[in-house]
Image (cartoon, rainbow, N blue to C red; front, side, top):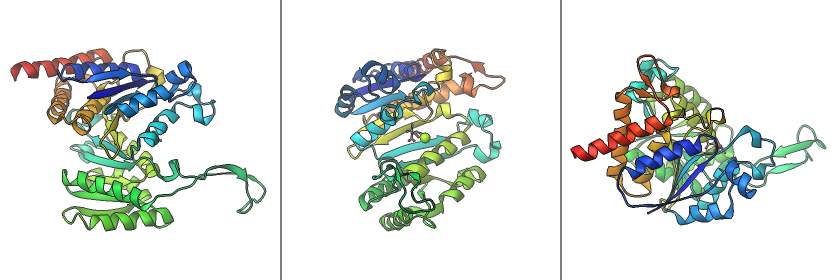
Length: 362
Ligand code: IPM
Ligand code: MG
C-alpha cells in the first residue's frame, strides 16, 4: 500500500502530520511519500501541481491531502493558482465520485447555529459529481459578444454539460451507497430551467429502476438549499452535479457547526482516492498549532475503508475520535464552556492514546 502525502498550504502541514501519527499508531504496513502541492509547490517549482507530484499521485493507492490556497496567490493567473492543484488531481486521476458526509456528533450538537432538535443525530451523505459540469465543460473563456443583450461588448462564458456515462456512473455510486445506509436517494437538479439537469434527472430516474429497494426522489437545487436548513434529517444520500454539490456540501457541513470535523473522499473507478478535510487552508491560523486535526484524521479513516481495504482500522480511528470528544477535549473551533481546550498536537496525541489503549485492552 502506498500513500501519497500532500500536505499543501496553510494549516495543511499541521493537520496532515497528526493524521500520519494516527495512521502509524495502527501498526499497519504501508509506504508513504510526501510531495509539495498548491502554493507551496508554486513557490518551489513554479506550478501548483508539478509533474513529480502528479506522478507520485498516480502511482499511489491513495492520497492524503491537507488543503491548498492563500489569499496571497489571488492575483496569479488562473492556471497557477493553488486551487488548480486540486482540480488537476481530480481531472488527471478521474476522481469523479466525491463523498462528503455531514455527521453531527452527539457532543457537538450545540456547535450548530440550528436548533439542537433539528440536527441531533444528523447523518447525511452528499455525493457530488466531481469531474464534469460547468467546472470542466469546454468551451469557456472571454470574447466579444456577437448576440445577447449587448452585442459587441466583452463577455465571459462557461459550458455546463454532462454526458450519459458520467451521470450513470455517479448515480450508481449514490444508489449503492444508499443501500448501505437508509436506502433513500435525493437527486438534486435544476430541471425546471436547465437542459443539462433535465437530462441528469431522466438518467438518474432510469438508473434508479435497477435499485427498486432504494427510494428515489428529486428536488430542485433552490428547494434543496432550503430543505437542508429546514429539515436536514429528512435526507439520507443526496446526489448532485459538480457545482450544486460544491454549494450544498458547504451548507450541509455548516449544519453540524463544525466544519473542522468533516472528512471527504474523492474516488475514481479503480477506488484510488484522494482524502481531504472538507475545510480549507485557513491561512489566518496557520502555524499557530490551534487547527482541528480531526477532519483530516477522519479522512485517513475513510482512506483505510475505501482505498486500502482496512475497515477495522477505520473503525478504530472513528471510535478513538468519539472517545476524545467524550473525554471533553476540544480544539478552539468546537470549544464550548465546560470542555477542555487543546491544540492541534494535543488532539492528535489524544487520538493516538485512545487507539493505543484499545490495542492493549484488545
Ligand atoms: C471544494 C472547493 C473546490 C471546489 C475549490 C478549491 C476548487 O471549494 O472542494 O469544494 O470548488 O470544488
Ligand atoms: Mg467548495
